[in-house]
Image 1 (cartoon, rainbow over the protein chains, first blue to last red):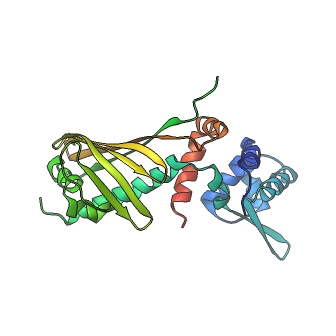
Image 2 (image 1 turned 90 degrees about the horizontal axis):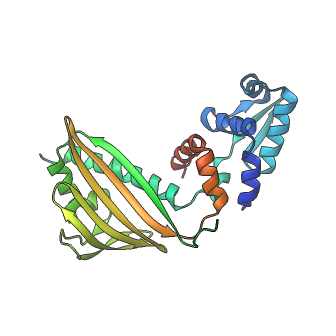
Image 3 (image 1 turned 90 degrees about the vertical axis):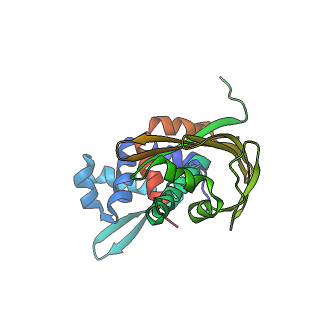
Length: 107
Length: 136
């Protein structure tokens, strides 16, 4: 579902919240407890940040027993990405193919 | 401070290859080789030559701007409403070649907030772009 870039910017403007989101992008699904251990702020503060991230569509939660697991939804960031990002990804993958070709070619 | 409606943006991708510049040059300028890593094409290494790159998502209209064998090649690149120029620069190294691709274009579909964010959070966006590049 499409969300406004404004909401995404407001959500990610807070450095603590951004760090929580980055951690979820890098390390996959985690519990509130695990996130609190790294965040350097209290568990209620982490829960509040997760609530805001969820509102912006940036995380999803999954309940398992008494634990809640959170997972990043990086695709929610797509509205922020312009052609420079798309082209950079395009060329990186072309460079990979070029390297493959060079390894197959004769000198 | 108002910005013009159409702003210039640049994408740079660089990589070290364990192959000599002459070999890279062939891969960059011979149509059957270009097709192997980029797209189907009717490229010819002549200034002003117009050619097309064909992908499943559409066609890129190109024209050779400058060419200096084994050193540099640039061509215009127009596709999907984007007017840009792609410049390849080859630099010999002790172990092979340093290849730099710079694409400079003009587009107007961007918020200033995003630009601000990019300057403010370069590390974040670098990681983000890698994350997204891995998604389908």
